[in-house]
Length: 431
Ligand code: SF4
Image (cartoon, rainbow, N blue to C red; front, side, top):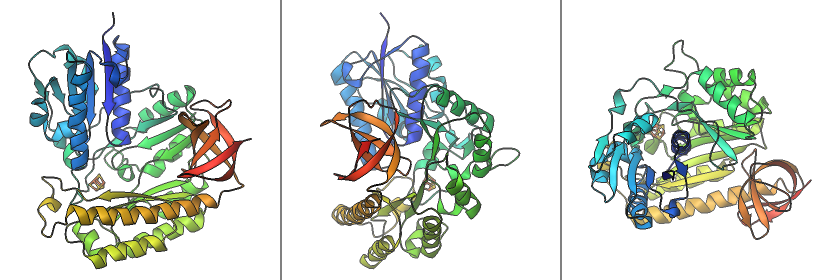
């Protein structure tokens, strides 16, 4: 009988991509991949440490793995494992803790795994190259992800990621194009380019290149289908890049740009090198050029010392900007970052209230954006299972559209007419 394995993943698309690649390595070595609840012989928990909440979720997953099968061997990896392997190695059932860069040699490490807990976490901060993980499919997902870059050199004062993922390292153009061609040939209608800091793409390669150059090379390749870009820092989105994206009908009209705060003093203390005026102008210019494009913003609330007035400025800035999606992050103190020891830390209650207020602004913006498409035709990629006779799909401009199930399958690209608003998204009729 084949050894069973399940992989559970928390966090960003980079982690999801890496889990899919580890799954492919294991399957090619003869493991049978099963659901988490099935109580596999081997459980890989790919953790995230971006907030205290994801740390706690990671620990819960490790404990649950042993509840489904008390004999399971549990292997822990990901950003939490990179930052605090000792603590995770103490949890029951954990036999191996590996860092982010050790994911590429998982099979080799498993073969030496034994009853005593082993920690294999290298010094990722000194790593200057990236070992691209290869992938031909993406579990049963309808969209696939391709990792183009890893790590970050920015050291925003609240962020633990540069410590967990190391310096910015880029995958070569040839390896990215190869992955994209394989995935599109395997039937994925949409592929998302992911990384930790993709606006920095290519700056470490010799000769130095950039994200625009990569997109131009992909355009000339045999890649078919539509491409979506992950988040790009505002300072790394020059007119040449957003104009190119806006004009390319094979790239989703979707710009994800982290704002983080609507106050210049807070931005400075966050170690983010732009002003609210610069940010506002950028969003308005992109919206002017591409009015149907989704513009998603990230915002953090409850940064140490954030006054009522500064919070109000963030709300006012957001209300004035033409964006469609808002991702709200309550500030979470990450030990080892400068923000963790800043004075005037806010209470959890205030942070929660502010986050709820910002989410309301985001909901109104999304509602307003979605409404404009009633009566229009959109191409959506079907994802997720059936719910109440409907299945959901995602449009190129990142709108969630529910459609009657009838003949649609997961991963299918279909054209719909938008009939109206449906819960937190839209409802469409198949054409
Ligand atoms: S840009 Fe800032 S927030 Fe984003 S990963 Fe890098 S350090 Fe973290």
